[in-house]
Length: 454
Ligand code: 5AD
Ligand code: SF4
Image 1 (cartoon, rainbow, N blue to C red):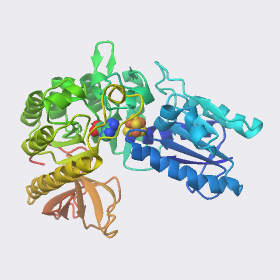
Image 2 (image 1 turned 90 degrees about the vertical axis):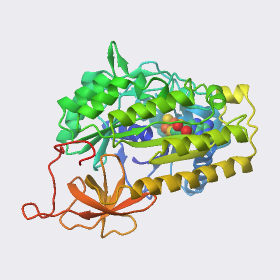
Image 3 (image 1 turned 45 degrees about the horizontal axis):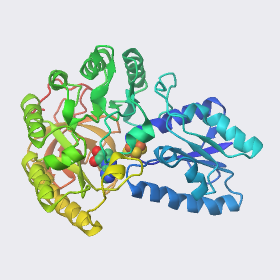
């Protein structure tokens, strides 16, 4: 049976899709990379905001027609939306045959079998306190970056967030198994590794913590670039900052979700830090890693957010000067604490206006910060041809900024030295640095020095 798997949502879902591919392949399903001709279509879904659900309902509508015409035999919804809506999903959308949550993927072959053989719908949303999938070797698509989930689930219960309900309790994977997988990935030729967790600060194996893990992955694998996402500002490990500063292969980049700038809102969100504590953390990060790339997530229009609260978020964004920010309208999610305790009382047009104002501010800040890069030199990891101009390359700096530049004789996975000659809001423009000994300046994997001199 030919299976086509589509992935929506975050990087954790991308990684989970690699696990799902491995699990299905093991049971002799054939995975295809083209929608046409697949008898089984699986959607690995997200539930973080209502528009993530809407996208899937729309896709299910399309699949209804294909199933009626006999082109598709089985439709499965996997992941966070499956866990969130459970059986209601199949009742709302009868086209769905299989509903499987994030801890149910090992049972997927049996579930698909029961639909194919007995024509029975199959549901599974048992969340586990133990499942880490550490015994499965993911089937990765070729590329420059590989992901490893080091922990799963979340126990923070931010009041707006559905993740603790869709991905269950926090559990960490053993360090030895992570390091072994990281070494295997390197041997397969990946140049970058991203360690994933809903909340990486909570990674723990006895006394061994996330900073220990980052240090050991950096030292025991010769992976040229290692990134991680996402930490929580409330208990960001200070030890980690020094580990990052001391290891050139740990990238100088931190994604630090602020969510809101008003202490009242932060408290209602159950973020358990104040704006001042966030500022102190940012100052310490910048002191320890001076050329760090800093990005964030912000929610506009959370329950009870007043104009004055929003102004505090606006001022916080101005003061911190993030390199970029993901800015979202609050979207009420069923089951969450906010859904049960607060009213979604900020009008839609106010949410929209706040998002627009904040985006405009952030665009100006990003542009200003990118312009400050003009004249500097960076080592970039070549990712792919540029989307806008396929004759040019897109590479990334250590800080995770995209650089577009022209060069022949390069391929994805190469490192190149570039000088920044221009800057836009989202991307830098670079010029390949050449010299007589190494005309294309393809540099060895691990840069000799880290920090702003790069
Ligand atoms: N509404 C809007 N944005 C949300 N996020 C999480 N839950 C919601 C929600 N209910 C945002 C947060 C988080 C990012 C992944 O998505 O900013 O950091
Ligand atoms: Fe990822 Fe959260 Fe969406 Fe689940 S709900 S796919 S964890 S972003």
